[in-house]
Length: 632
Image (cartoon, rainbow, N blue to C red; front, top):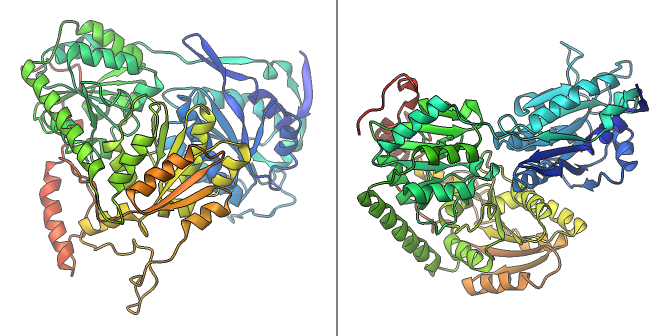
């Protein structure tokens, strides 16, 4: 058998650059290169291997967590068919990636993490940045990746790579199992040579299948839908990843069934599609949430039904409600005691469309859908048209960015109050136009994520909207965007602290405690004047064009000026955090102290005890397939 005598690190890079994926006859390279910051855990092993493979580009990030966010956003924008490798030194470089790993895994996005590790031969231990354990020598900080990885391994010997790499690829390319994959690489093993079989370096194409729904369950699902009077579709991220958006649009027109979109599923339909009621759940529109409340059959597609989607299990109040779930992941398909169609979203919708052919919602229900939709468009226009301040409202800024962006451009966000407002208000026109990381809602994702989105398709302008608190957590990848020549349009909303959690704090009776950026006052608390943070200088110091806007007209002028800039550009605008976009027909379970000396907390607890009574145990319904459809 022909072999190649190379180091473990050289073999690893040689394997990675020859991995491809294929779906529907379209083939593309899976790994587009590697991100990292060289340290003593990788510079002499993996670093040298990357240096010898210029056709596998190495990208220098400013924070290892940022690198994983870039890779995650890139893979999300590419519908999980391409990603990056992220590498790091041992110790703090590795642990910096853990938050990024959790973000990728929560959102079911493939990224490959290659943290350097301590010596496999132990005679030199403890090495620099090694945390010792008196209980075992078979542990390092990289074991902390286990709960946030979908696959984890440590390569103690060079030959173990031959068995580990195919398993890593199996998980990375699985629509149902994908997430962060971690291969911990002891620094001495990286440099050891082995005679690897030549087959390891040959091109391999991983086919992404489209599993079919099970026939008996499909027939039962069709029977339930045909009997439904107030059905509703909940479109999740799986609709977009499966490239099922056109099929969903046809199915919604065919049946008249309205659609509510999750954060990951927003853009499944254009905002002006007649059946699109917009956002659903805690951050949803009134129409989508009213439809959820009345629905007798809920068809969930590619969603994991998080608490924000289900409004903490209060969204679906019809006592006879039943769920049909189209999901490639069996784990998600069975949630809410659903009738589980474990299959590809596009194929499942196509088969269901055939099975319910001739069915259409009643004229009365169709009229309600049209009314809800029209009223929401009027409400959006009202919020965009508010003339408040200065400081102006966040809704006004969103409206300005919405008007400035082209239909093909992308809005990027992750944390704070912006996800809720954007989920409701952003008028998405194409499936990738709304990029929200809301599985982990990770502060600091925004700018790094924006760079990943831009790299995935440089032809589209990327608008990153980020709050001041999230910006201060991680703005350094602005430097990377300039380094690589990918222009971002960044809008910083300065509300002097944590607007979202401040609002929540007030709602639970805590009065915003600990959520403002203030000096420590005479009381001993953080209740002095606002801290004078100059975001224009901060962004300019990183190399971006930066300007301040106080009025709506200045925001619009700043957005227009961005078009003429040749590198990342920033507009900083102060907003009034108390001028909020309201919530609509929804609730979120945030437990409040049962006893307190504060009257505001006692009042909030009393309201909580009333609201929590609406929570339902959908899981205790009769198992799907064991009951006949009920008359509705």
